[in-house]
Image (cartoon, rainbow, N blue to C red):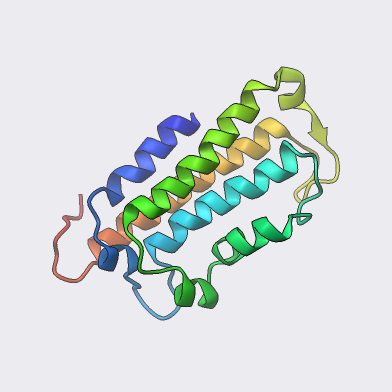
Length: 159
């Protein structure tokens, strides 16, 4: 499911230039490049929480330095996450995903169904948490497609 969704979300961004990835619809929007890094950040933070068993927010300084701006998006992301080719973001997303897949191989159905009684929206198992990571990508897929149709120059069709 996660592999399929990753393929689906990357299709709209194939062949995009740095300027296209950096495009902002307005002063309050997020660019595609920032959202790509946001997806990697989300997945990394779920790794720390579910695979390392840490409370949400108990992230290392290294992980926060690397991913906090992308996780929050907004003004700071608009200022700092820009100017890189698509491969830069894909490499980070691939690195994070490879770790996820390696960690999944170490776990069984009992782990997947283990319930976290203190989760934000109520008792939730690891399956639901990782489904959320997957559907999070799906959500941003719609944004990628919308932004792509609004790029200056009409290079991309609305399809």
